[in-house]
Amino acid sequence: MMMTEKQITAATADEQTQKLYETAFPEDEQIPWDELLRLVKEMSLDFTTYYDEEKFIGFTIVYPRKAFNWYWYFAVREDLRGKGYGQQILTQLIEKYKGQSCVLDMESPYQTPCPNPEQRKRRHGFYLRNGFRDTNVYRTYNDITMTVMMMGPGTFTLQDWDDITNELKQFWWPEDIKESM
Image (cartoon, rainbow, N blue to C red; front, side, top):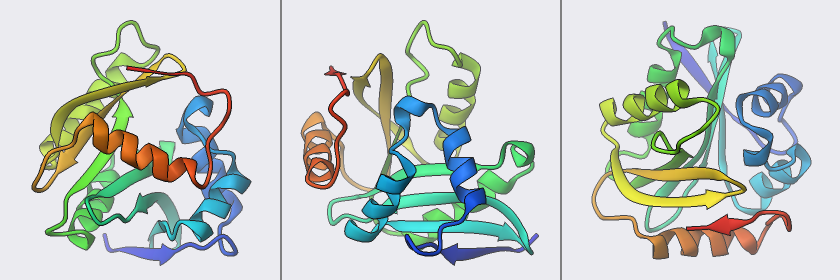
């Protein structure tokens, strides 16, 4: 199967991408769609959709940075999960940012209790199999503990997390987020 990519801008984002975004991530982890599109424009985010011929598969949003690239959002349509598409997208993403450090945050597989422990463990294993490593950096927002994983040279610290959060706060930050360590 040969997947194709399409770069998305605020003007070209479509309903199927919005629907996947709004169903693939818990509401507490979503930026409102209209705000996300504004950020795509203002932060020069790498927003890419993926297709198998004409069939929409999923999308990624990466925040390219000097110190490391932040794999911010990554989703595959629910009916297509477990069919190798996520692997193919991640492989393309890794190739695109080859030689650069990349990080992602995900719902921690170590948080207990949580509503989706098996999904978190599968996702964590997927990233480990693809060359990411645990940084042992965690942050909790509104009772969801996130863990940071990294690929490439270097380390990731709580200070790095604060730096990227402060960058994001220049563009957007909801008032109702309660942060804890």
